[in-house]
Image 1: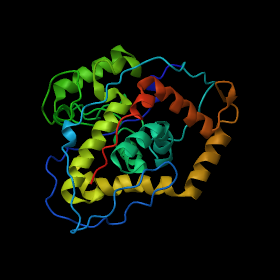
Image 2: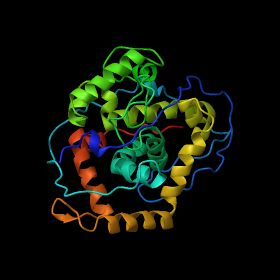
Image 3: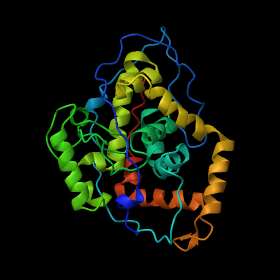
Image 4: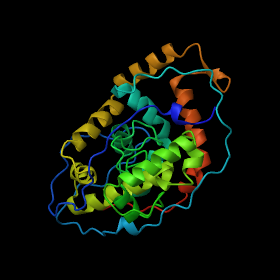
Length: 296
């Protein structure tokens, strides 16, 4: 089964991106639930007595990854996902990329769930879905042209505008031309590459975190919207709630009891694991070998 646009339903609009983080310190507000399984822990709380070795994450090299056909396309007889407009539908789709967010979070010393929450808000789990406004934003975690350029991603045009509707039209045409096939789209714009995109977005969040030592402030500066940390935090909280996730999983399994994936029952666990295997085609194994660049 080819991973195309129909596999990733959902449209989202992304706001303007903040460029400068605030130059003050504030303790973590506690909006986000403590980390659980497969979550890298956030750095230790900021202390005035501690010296921090700050780095410019915009200068960290983009991982040299592309597409290499290691894992064959999935064979799925059907799938019944939750409504894309609701939180469960977004979480079901976002968790297909959990091994990507786990790897990126581990490299930079941040929360995997927080990155997944950003995916829920930005693209609803669809790496081929650009900003609904057509302003040039794209990626699992949407990045505007100017910021994608600043963090080293090659784009379909060499735009350095914050909003570029001409680039947005080119992105739309490319998606249509390749019928939303992700392995083709990664060759025209690196924001479509799930690992490169999440890595770049994480680096940008880390740069903002270094200036405030507050993850909520870092998220606010990333999106340029005051409500953004709360929106992301809502998904983080749901994914950390074991009762919520048990219900999500159980209902998925009931709805899909008649379907199979690669000859196995289509349980939520098998569904997610199959996508995680497919992510090997985008270089997740090589990415995990990269050195740690933990934010401080």
